[in-house]
Amino acid sequence: MKGRIHSLETFGTVDGPGIRFVLFMQGCALQCQFCHNPDTWDTAGGKQVTVDEIVKELEPYLEYYRRSGGGITVTGGEPTLQAGFVAQLFQECKRRYGLHTTLDTSGFCDPEHVAELIDATDLVLLDLKQMNNAKHEALTSQPNERIHRFANELSELGKPVWIRHVLIPGLTDSFEDLYALGAFIGKLQNVQKVELLPYHRMGVYKWQQLNKKYPLEGVPVPSEHEVERAWTIVQTGIAASSRGRDIRINQSN
Ligand code: SF4
Image (cartoon, rainbow, N blue to C red):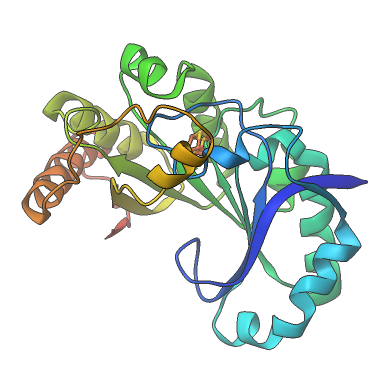
């Protein structure tokens, strides 16, 4: 089986624990206005590779991944669009090297379609982009119900999850939306960590290279104070919905 990839990184440190081999899959069904990888959207782009070819790429660095408590992370684009390939890759990484596997996903997928992949995944990084459905659709081009169904399914399975949320001034930082995010997280049984990722503009040049108009022109990056305020609101939502249940959530950004 072949997969279509955008690129790879051998020393990733921000997409899961430890030092990681990070594979960027090609293709995404969303079109997030803040996306810093719009060059991964086209399902016909990138290049085709085999599982064996990817395994050979990571082999020279295995000691770094193991000693740091790291492993492999597959991100994108949207890796669940190529669930069969990523499942095989994770199975091989586990069978040959016992590597820890992390899936970084928007969650815009059908749980049945990704069952084998989830089974081979140790940790899911799940991006919850906007709790308000109309705003979600405006921000990403798709509604959020399917993503919430997937989050609930992972909770029922007890699959470890880190939740990620990009904090964008004026778009994802209202009190109501952040509180709703916390309330949703507080009901899940499997969240180990929540990451509030301040919006940044590092991918803007890619939109220009693709001759696409950048939709968030003029939107500022959030200040430290705004990030702290957001944390307080999210934590209030979590506390309210978990009703004293002892949930271990490590914040990070
Ligand atoms: S889901 Fe990720 S890759 Fe896809 S458009 Fe959104 S930010 Fe970009």
